Image (cartoon, rainbow, N blue to C red):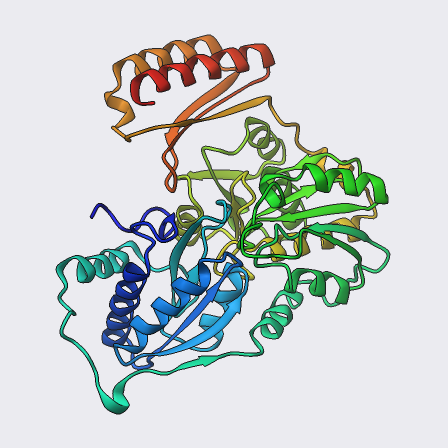
Length: 449
């Protein structure tokens, strides 16, 4: 078995290694053993998105945890950040999320939160993986009354709804605002419409009827085109698109135009700075943030620091540097003064509070930054050799950087969760942007495609 945990937990095709029932049972056992050893309380929360394979994995995880003498608290379908909240709120030892986030329904995954609501540290993941591969816990089997029990938390949805609403200003309301919302047939389908409706908005919801196989299926944060059309047709003020597990947000303005995470972060950073809430005048980003975002932050005299790609790395740097705002252009946005992880619903609430308070149109607020033309090409790869060792690619990168000559930038990196190499080029010259990206992608295909 190769490395079990990637950049965002364990992930793969459901019922194929490593996402089998047998592996889920082993992960449950190993996680329960680590929790029992490190804490006095012995309860683990399990939640999931709406994939059909979630039932299989949930049952296997529950069996594994209970077999080690630890109780399970089942919350059912709930956004990933909601499971993080419930874990901390219930003072559980850990929270386990069954989800493959924005991936198609046939994939699934397992990610783990610690009792404080943050994702578990890499060292703990390594310990869990070691327990599985060495079978050190094979013969640890409590019996009789020492076997764990499983309970369902019936009010988990209500608890999370209250938690999210409490991040919205007490003096504010969404009365008079028309919202179209795309729930991606995923984990937000119950909670999101309730939250925004109870705050006064007129909400129209699409893709909120999951059947186990339609999660992320040409809908949600990765496919906001239909949402854009619905916003224009209905004359809505804003469109909100979440991904399958609810930790991403992509926004549509009143003109039907897509605003990515960079726009939301920029708008919130400006407002938070003006209100004295942007701690250390700092925003944490990654290499994937647009060149136009960087220009906007420079104009606003807001500092940015760059973390490795992945929300866990953004969060890590935020905690190290004392920042309260950070995120990625993909829509993972973290408000550390409100939550321990990225939350699409909370990000939307902060943005809409600013929009309502400003009295402006969303397109006007988004005008503080102008996206540099960007081309992102995902190249499917068979292996992931170190990019620095691919001489043809390195030669091409040096030429590309010379061609861009300070007018843009180029980034080539592997996906942490898929067999993909991402080629990204940004430049104010759109023709040069396309030509450079296509040339680099072709070289990647030749080397490792």
